[in-house]
Image (cartoon, rainbow, N blue to C red):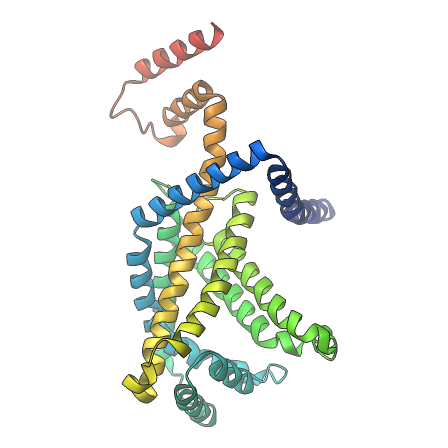
Length: 359
């Protein structure tokens, strides 16, 4: 029995991986097919423009900018305890060399004086190693759970879930800690990428160094977004919409990071205004931009998913109406339409649709 379950589990994983691997090749073939045909090319450009308009309308109507601001506030509440938690525990893993990795990240992404100030602060924390107390731990758990709930509710709302399934508190805690552990694993993976034997060996070849430094963070970011969009929502998203949405969100994030770095270094004078505190507004802006991109990504997934459903609705609208009415008049869904229309009227309406379909 256990062998059968294990075999079915492995088969499911294998089928999912194969399906994900087929998606980019299928999309590339479709794009090539449309580009090579003038008529299909015009139609593709028209559909792309329409898709961008729909995406823009959805982003504005869902209040992505406002939601990102609230998520930035909650993130900042738990940011210091979380960094303290990482700094206190992760240095016990010698292969990560977190202190030097953090210094490299700070020097690469912050203004010189600000990075030096933050690096000095981290050095003092590593020397003391007593700053993470029970209050910091409770604050970390509370803010992390609040962030988890807000993100999940926002994702469910964007994915057009009117009534999300109610999990008991045990189910919510399991999902919360599962997400937290996976997030921590991804962070450890990000820090330890250059410590992996294969990567270290490949970095010895100078012609591969720059390519790997560009490709590895992209795929790690893509993998992290895939897990985020897969695990947090209460609704299961279609595989194709999830893959495409996470991929384009990663592309946008990569471009936005380069643009943000260029803007901070060339078009602003934050350091002259804030001095050593320049790290604060830069961090706030970067966290806010990240949340805008992440929430925009779930909107993108929703639009891609609904565009597929729209094609089905256009091909057979009467069948869609019939199935919808049957679903919403089902006992398992608590007869959600009975406050507005009687069950007998629903059956009569479905019969009319069936008669028209037969004609």
